[in-house]
Image (cartoon, rainbow, N blue to C red; front, side, top):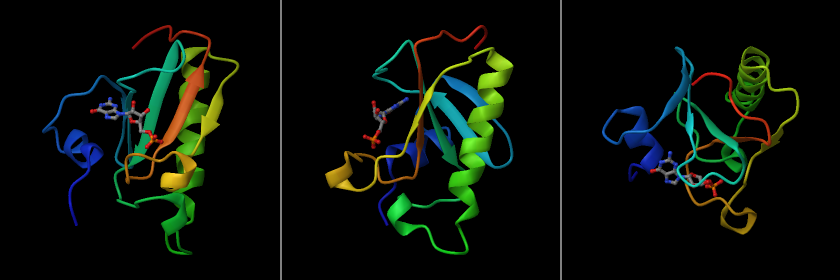
Length: 110
Ligand code: 5GP
């Protein structure tokens, strides 16, 4: 399997503006933000897409959503959009599962 750009960010081979990291996820600023705050949440365990989630990995999308919820609360962001693009037809360009976090509100700290 070819490494995606997000594998390289996770490995530290490509730099990104890291917003949050723990044992399970990495969150970083989207390089082409579509809102004043645009963060991507990725799991450290690789899954290519929501289309590839199985019963064994079904907890991962929920985990990403919970981390995004916690991140928003910590940042004092009250309104935001969460989006998964699924497959090329769904606008997914990077085949590494990621949750888009978009808000018109700015981060209070980064
Ligand atoms: P997708 O369309 O696959 O759901 O979203 C991929 C997102 O990754 C896009 O919003 C794009 O701007 C972002 N992106 C692509 N390459 C890079 C990169 O090298 N660094 C960062 N931080 N974001 C990237």
